Image (cartoon, rainbow, N blue to C red; front, side, top):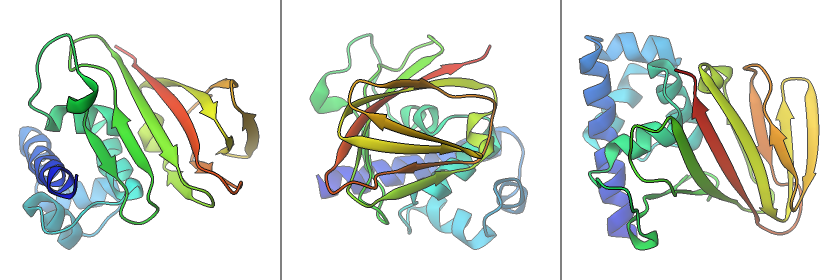
Length: 189
């Protein structure tokens, strides 16, 4: 899986460059819009650095894309059936957070992402990730605390939450076991 993950990180870096160039943005333009350093954007585009979840969230938010859509665009798979073994998996090198893009690449404005959040992990997401999107979080197993701006949602297995207006958010696993949840991302057309 390491080679597969490195390959995905390289494709993500290449996709970030494509998205940036399609908008006629310089490295500095993207860095400023995402609130990250120019050097870091350059390292990621070259595949010299594995992006963290927070960094990917900032970059995708600058493009007006969800992380799911950015990762899906990095994949070359086409077709209506995306087999489990072909679903892109990305691991946050900082937290061990594992995200599997479940839905096939298509024109349907919906993405399904399965996430495994290790015990004690916290994944912050800036409000820009939620602009132009509607999202649901369905907790499949374990416990999840979702901090949405000032609102704290404590979720148990089976609970489903619709996110409100864009706000800075944090996914937290305060328990001693990995939690697994599904994120449904619907793009507003």
